[in-house]
Amino acid sequence: MQKIILASGSKQRRILMEALKIPFEVIPSDIDEKAVTATTDKERARLIALAKAQKISQQHPEAIVISGDTFTFVNGKAYEKPHTLEEAKQMLKEQSGKQGTCYSGCAYLDLRNKIEFSTTSETTFIFRDLSEAEIEKYVAQNPVLTWSAGFCPAYPEGINMIRAIAGSLSSFSHGLPMEVVVPLLEKSGAFDEKN
Image (cartoon, rainbow, N blue to C red; front, side, top):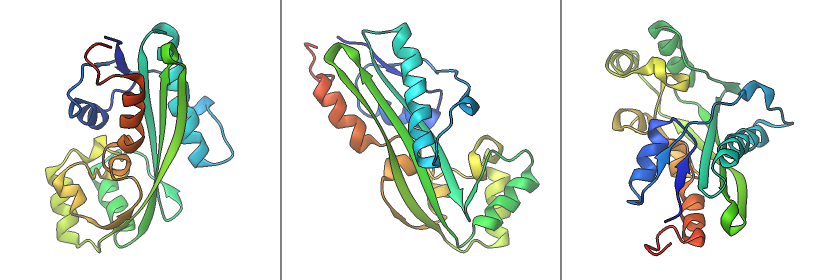
């Protein structure tokens, strides 16, 4: 069977791949993301994902390599991981009631079957109006310092803060557009046991 590699250390992306019930391994791609430039953030997400996949594909040319990269913007601002709990609280206050955009770059390389694909899924979302007490509780009970914007919609506590979304659900929640990945895996024959 052809090896499948997830070129990402993201726990959320790994969870999505595990749900497919096909063998894969995780080999995070360590690239200098700051060296990747583009005219738009949407294009930069795609190019970073592609650079990650290309690095691992060079090392494993017979494998299917899947990678992703996600940027989230609210108020036109890209939120990084907070350094302190106070900073996480401030980030959530700034996002409360606001609309944001999530760009998830995705790359899929299967050189054996001549499939090379990369794209960016764009998802818009709106936060509910969050109370001070809700923010305090969320920050106290979740590993907010490990998440960009101090927030992760992959868990019930996080998705409960969202009023509406439009676009790719799996990109927004877990950082990988499975509506793109699954058909590509099918095209590669990854679900065929004889592959």
